[in-house]
Length: 174
Image: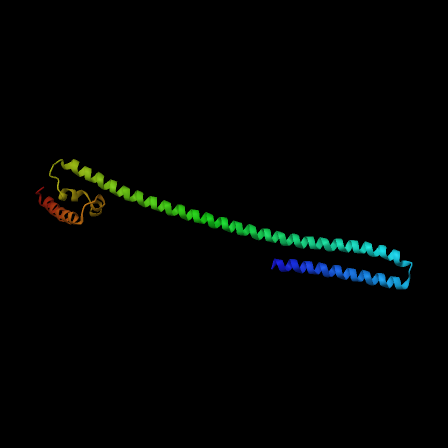
């Protein structure tokens, strides 16, 4: 669109220059036909007029070209800002993704650490060589036992033992 405006401005300038030149030629021809002595005076007036017309037209052309260049620069500036925003958004997304992964890893590590602390506390409470899975199941949840690496059959056994120990406590056998 801007290219069309620039070409249009240049065509208008060229047509105006041709029109001025045609008017000048007609004026000189008409003057020469009327009076041979006026040729010198007329040519001076014509050259002065042509000088100012060409300057005005040149200024118009310069302004149109400057407008075109400024609009191109503005378009490039907007594209550059858009590209910078896209890159910044990409890096923000990458940082957020990395933060989420780190947070998830820390949460998992924290769960395992808490389960191990409970396991140590259970051993310290009983201080018996025969601490069974049933005793441990009173202190650890199923998920914590899974996090600590207990097998599925051990977890099922622990759940059964947990129920037995709870019943034994209620009955006063422990």
